[in-house]
Amino acid sequence: MVAGMVKPDDPPPAPTTQPIAIQADANVAPGVYSNLMMISHRREEFVLDFLFVQPQRGPGGEAVASLRSRVVTTPEHTKRVLRALEENVRRYEAAFGTIQEATDLPSVLQ
Image (cartoon, rainbow, N blue to C red; front, side):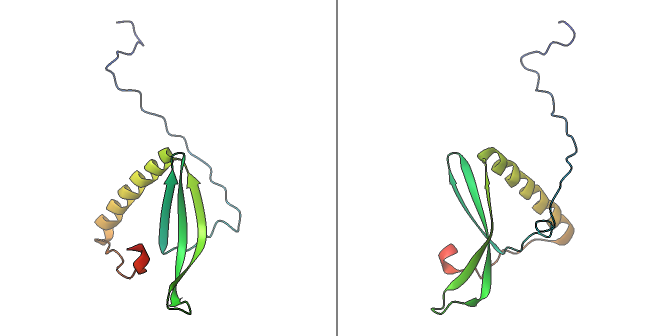
């Protein structure tokens, strides 16, 4: 075999990581608080709606939520986000204990 040639059964080379300089203006940098997320999708994209469910109820006793942020992204990136969240939840629980899931969600979301 010639030096530098790749055999068909060789794994692809690992991608190199490069640092990214993240810039955020003063309005975006603090972030927003969200206590609920709704997800929808179509073939080309996922839509992640981050909501804040208010503790007070509406006039008819219904839950009131306001959209705080919407992220529209590709299916491929959504899968990377899912893997990153799973890994970070594992690390968090290893450090701080098991996260208990919320039980007080509005009934329409359960």
